Length: 155
Image (cartoon, rainbow, N blue to C red; front, side, top):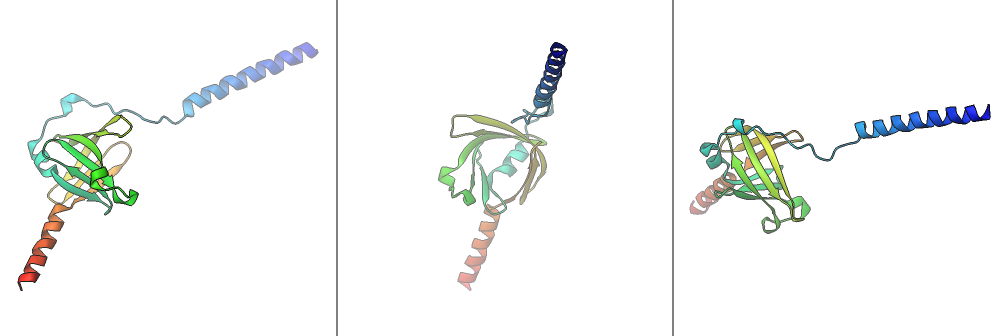
């Protein structure tokens, strides 16, 4: 009788362990889900490329600079970073998407594929599976402020 009890306890423990291991692997968070990009859907867009070039800001503290040569930088002034300390990235513009490859300081690269929601002279909106971004162009605002100051100084 004592032997039967130990066998039943061992069987129950083995089943509980198997269920626990199965639940662990099914429910554990995965750090990164790579996006599947269908190259047939990507068509280069010179118009989008021209409109992206410049300095953009998000919420007044996160900045993105898109340069004409397909490179750029991003930084967050709330983290006490300046443009000189910014994280570099390369980018490509497509009809309805932006591909950014961020170059990390820890010797890694992170390719990100964003779907383009809106792009005009003043607003840039894009999203991926994890978050969405709404940016405003900075250079136009600065140029308008300089024009107002110039007009004020001449009068």
